[in-house]
Image 1: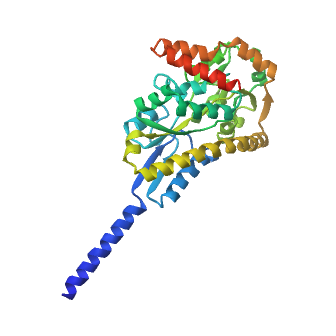
Image 2: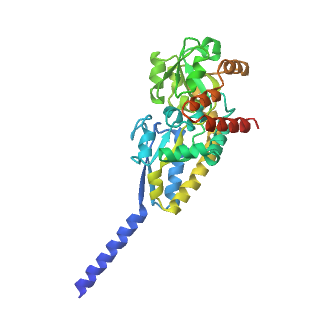
Image 3: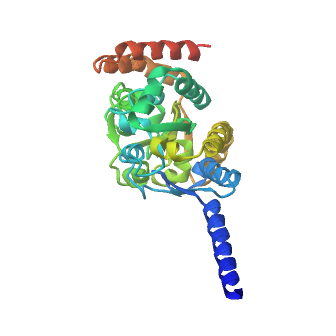
Length: 338
């Protein structure tokens, strides 16, 4: 009898420990990132930590950096299929799939990174084409990176004058940013962020084209002393979660993730505003020289460039989405003019 009671007690304790273990971590979510682990993604790390904290450890978000779960060109497909749970996706890398999201990376539309994020939040919440795009691809948008303004970085100070960019090879990506480069006679070249140091150092390209935070993070000022800008403000990558993952999460966990994603968006804008000042100081301390593009030079560059929202609308017209794209462009023009 005592032996039976002891066995029953051990079985009960085992059940308790098993239940406790399940509660401690019910969902391990793999987050594929194309960027390296740096202070530049701290807000996303804080987001993951807050979700784990608020769910009492039921959710653990495992961030894998530098393409460890898939290349930057593969992450959208992987998260859409549910092969990974979350991803940092650059819309401009998927011009044929993210037809609407890629427009958030259109040059000469937004006057600041904060405005680009305001338009992103509005678009995914209010504009049906953005909602339909997420549903079609099997993903759920959580928040955007408010990437600070873009600078060209290279070995000469010619980047300060758009008139001197003719014949230069400049890093580009997506379908719209190349138009900005060809408008001044430059040659757009696609180079992943992690390869920019070597590309500038070896002269494969004359100038990288990334935000100040990544000039700092990748130490590009060592490969090319001069950084000229700001030349462009856009929204950065977006953090998305697979619909398959989202649908298997309990409602209370979905609520936590939604709330923390909204908080991360606010924190990201605030962080971007303060971080860029620190990045500038670190670039200068490392020997980099930052040259301002004058308002006149930037206006002249913009004047030479086709209206890229119109270019985007024409592209979508050829895909049977002209009316929807025109409505989006109209709404954006009205909001950015306020």
